[in-house]
Length: 343
Ligand SMILES: [Zn+2]
Image (cartoon, rainbow, N blue to C red; front, side, top):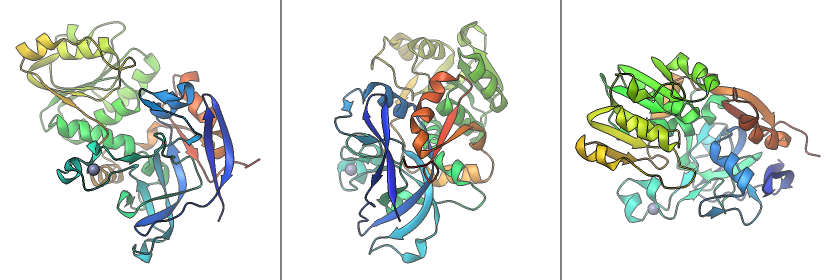
């Protein structure tokens, strides 16, 4: 078995390198990576070499939305797992800190998250991961789809925070992959009305198949339409979209902040939070979501496969990372690490 990875050496420079096969700890499994989604954070590291305080100081393997097949297991893992098809949950917490013991392992200060410096990600032929974070997927789910349990997990975490339930009217701001998956999750959780906003006509026309209302807020503010919502899930990272969404919710609505804002902080309409008794939640990644994500996707209640707009070999990672900027119809490029020539 040989290993290779696509390595970010400096902003906008990715090279394909042969690498040693990862060491597999006693509680880890070795996974042959078959599909990896390109995420906005990967694109940001590729373009800028950093996200806030996370700075790429040494060559880094990107990619954290991954699925594959277990090739080998550590000494303490049941060998019957070899050959299992799995979706990888890419943040490994320490398991013992206060946050982990409270069940909020996504907030573990010692989490090791794929493709976040200095931890390498999954644009590689082989990766090692904790046994419990390699989640089995049924045959009805392709490995391409299984890779997207990670962004779907964010949608599930957001809908859980907002307590989306039968009868909820839900507004999602931002029709990127996370927004579309949050909207689909809201539908699967029983929402009555699901609306999504964006300023990009291509994204809106794609998202329209999954929602009741696809609103171009470049033309008309969501809050100017006379429609109100019980839940706002903010996925755009746009201060104007967030403010419009806050203005469109009913009193006592739940608001969930998912998108990252380019400048970190924004001017925020706290007055409306006070007068409407809005409950504001943050979502940072997710915890305990993979079982639900796999079940929803396997049952066809959430469609992740339609989001995949291109496929690239390991030697085409840079092209995959550039695709969403070059083509507004691109939703989710996938990297297939077993494909592509190695120079
Ligand atoms: Zn912890």
